Length: 86
Image (cartoon, rainbow, N blue to C red; front, side, top):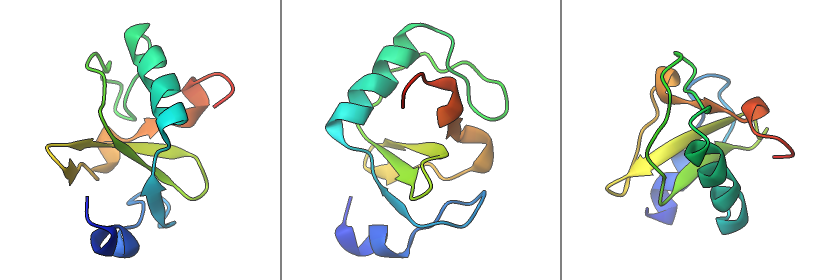
């Protein structure tokens, strides 16, 4: 994802800036996904590991990046409260 694009993106839920999820946190996210208990904000279980994601500056919501495109729909957000010690 281009840095220029990242500079203008914000969380559609609470309007804070977004940043790329670190590799360490992406690993932790994918571990949670593999447990089949992680859900989007609309209650859909996430079953596919992610290669990249964005997180709000307040660390409350994660948004997947698929095919180098961020998916910024509020119903596709992943609340970080579901992930222990995130």
